[in-house]
Length: 147
Image (cartoon, rainbow, N blue to C red):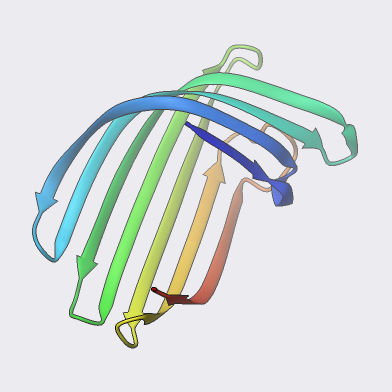
């Protein structure tokens, strides 16, 4: 179950509930690959950019698949990657709504408690519910302190 919002894309609410199966395709000490296949019920509320008093609501049953993996290159460098593919049929608009999401994080351990992170996120929607960009991305850098 998740509750989300995305203010930058005019989505004040996203609710989802789902479940699925996961399979560890690779399970070694310094690397893992996990495959997942599931279903989810998703409810989204979107605000029209030209008139934010208008709410567009979608309630879809979707397939949700993912590939998740990480590689620990050495004691200091780790790469985490996850990619989701979600698709559901929108009866109201008579089309399939597809969403692909990717997240890549590379971390550089500086000390036992301190690490530098570089993260890239991307999302593509083939038929956005409201008129927004189909492809969005973000590149973030940060520092993590482990207590």
